[in-house]
Length: 188
Image (tube, rainbow, N blue to C red; front, top):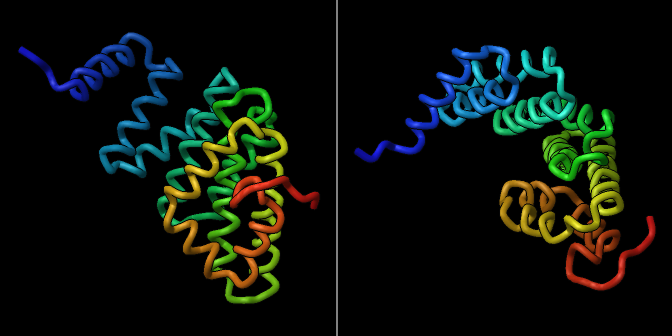
């Protein structure tokens, strides 16, 4: 009998956690499945617990990244910023290529906050922080620029947020021609 791969994976994960309830990677996968199943509060609680308790720094980083992504899905961009900032401030984003997305997510959160800002000064500050995050991403992870382009293309909400902020699209093209249509980059 052929089992559903997802159900088989859940069963094996449950068995692994029964054998060792503290296994960090298994707990990460369990939280991921909770989020996948729409149990976001439970997933968030597990990610927070892992972040607080994990012995391996990379597992703390994965928990922070996933928790940040949950916050982004809820539109809680300020909470998400805290998670992604931790990944960059801890040094994980520079030490492990799997975490380069923290800087992209910082860019995304700041762009979304710029769109939400009702005061022009707050909007401009969020836009500048978004641009600074993207500059750090480009400078520290230049090998990921194709992935960044794809992420931008695959995110209509992000593009809409950028387009809604006066001067934001133009600033992106001017400061990042290597990302938006080509040529050499300009210095900030």
